[in-house]
Image (cartoon, rainbow, N blue to C red; front, side, top):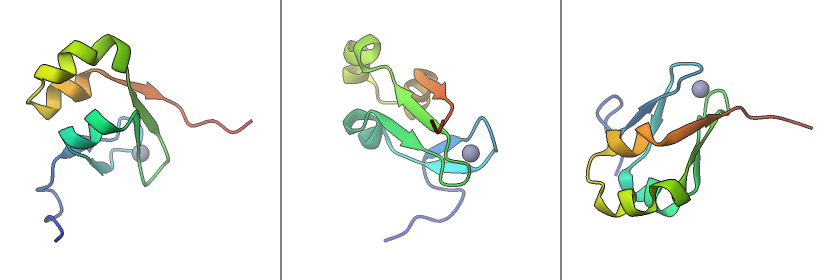
Length: 74
Ligand SMILES: [Zn+2]
């Protein structure tokens, strides 16, 4: 099943403004999420957020803990 665009949980890419669909479960189980449009990598500071993530019920709270990381090619 697909969620309706614009209705699904997620965040707005800080770089290109694209919607990045994600869920609290994704944030809890993945160290990073990626913008499908520009490839921006958003990482969750799991060490910092470990205790907080256990309590998180609001996706926005988790996203506030996300760190913007530029995708880089070496
Ligand atoms: Zn983007």
